[in-house]
Length: 419
Ligand SMILES: [Zn+2]
Image (cartoon, rainbow, N blue to C red; front, side, top):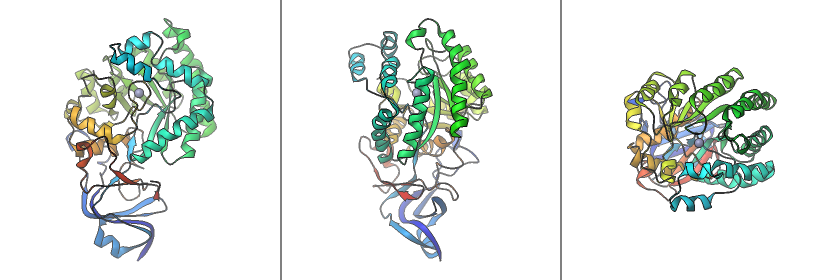
């Protein structure tokens, strides 16, 4: 008998969600690798083996044995697009939208992202940590074991670096593991109204080098992201920022095609970005480009739902082109304050027409690839980090089908029970 730290056994379904030499692309999306009467052994935070319960119980003796009878076991959800950390809320703007104002109208009037920027600039690192810990606790309780977090509510060098410091403190203070993104090009700040190119100059000459110095100082990689959108940063400005960032050692992400298709997705593929996110109004040629490149398309169905829009990421077209599709919450105080990947799966099934199996793979394995971590997390394969969920139900197909309640009963991060 081998001694291990953790043995989860007798699961009605154990969903391995195997990698396909990378993310599950195109028609291959939705391979959950289900083991009935399944078991998983983990030691020192890593998965040692998965298989039938009888086989693993004969092979391993564990300090901590979990009987998962009547339960489904899954990889922890990975949320590859959030806007944590921020300060304050915009409940008043939601009320304005309900009365007929559009998101872009509110933004043009000084609200929107700038409203959160004003509140976040006033917060200290300690304030940001205190405000955002409960959000991460909600994410964890709903099954998210790794997430991306972004700056973008500072929009000046000091406030952007303050957000990075807050992320680092949040990463150390709780179990959800954070991948960090620098997004000084999230909006054009008030002082640069009508002078977007001057702000882009500041981004490339001062802010990106400051973020690169922060990377070296803390030995933490950063993604650089740009909100490529009509009225925000156009394609040429986006290219200038991303090419500079790439030279400075950032990996790349892009907010593309949320309201208009400007070519941001094809640019992301061309520059080797790790992901292109939103992709609601993506032109057909850009969808084809996703099939040829390694850039993961990240659908954020909580955002059109949050805005009461009717158009969603065309998942069927992306998969038909052979693209790799992931899901994320886009958790942010303006358009989509939602911490739950279970809710995102429910929306993706209805409005992106994914099956539950496709949505689960997009929220785990493919989401891990969307933050460049696909070889470490996102599936229950031997050697990977032991980030594991136990659902309170026996069948993974209850995910998506049910919504608004939490089906996650236990969460393990690196083999330790955290919920
Ligand atoms: Zn976003």
